[in-house]
Length: 311
Image (cartoon, rainbow, N blue to C red; front, side):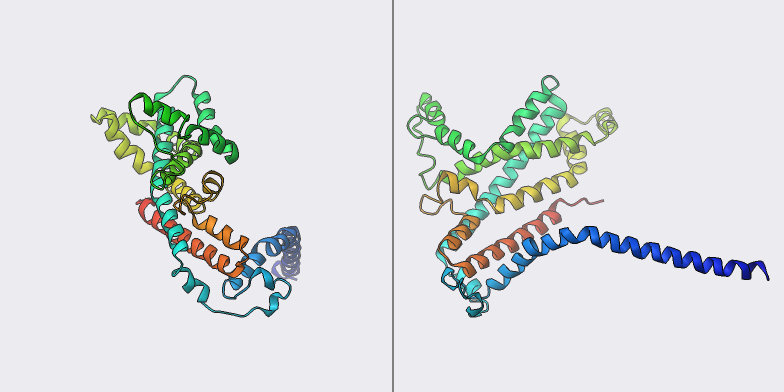
């Protein structure tokens, strides 16, 4: 018998053994993944799909005893949304909050990161903790502090304005100042999160590039514009997307601070969804939430278009 003939059964045996081992690993992998998949389907994917289907029905709280007896209404809930003055106000408020709040928070976070990376050498850890502390602080505690700060009669802000002869407004009950006050509070609360992300991005930039730019005669602003910003685009993109998604869903700030007032000027889409669920309009609230989801997708695509790396 030739050597090739002698090796053939052994080769087939090895292939069969490898196939058996691969099959066992495949089954074992699915076995380990099954508990997570089960929980995901039951508590995540299932409710998401159910809520999407619910947005095309007329389900209300009174129908919970017979959920299969509801009537399909097609796109009626979505059409009704855009004829709802309160929803349009909530959408405009949300757009205002995002368009002003996201750039403000990113600028402040980047400024703090640049300062910690280059300008502040002593007590750097202290400043990092100080900037990040509001991120992990309860919104209720922050709301109590900011309510005191913005108190019209005895608040710190109006007291300081009074020293220079300016009569401060009632910040949280004035239709002009309520939303800017929430934006400032939210930017202050979240800049520490972006600071940590941007600081990591800054520390990943090779110092040789700054030294080469300085040798070519570039000033600090020129180095920041032509070295830092281009190399920070992926980090800026991540920070912008995360912040934009969070700000589109802003709920806690108006819920705790203003209850959506005055005159619905701080009512957000997420808060409006919460109210509709509270009123028992489940299908209508589901439609609002999916419009908000579409807004998140659109904003994310725009940010990818503007901030993605050009290389």
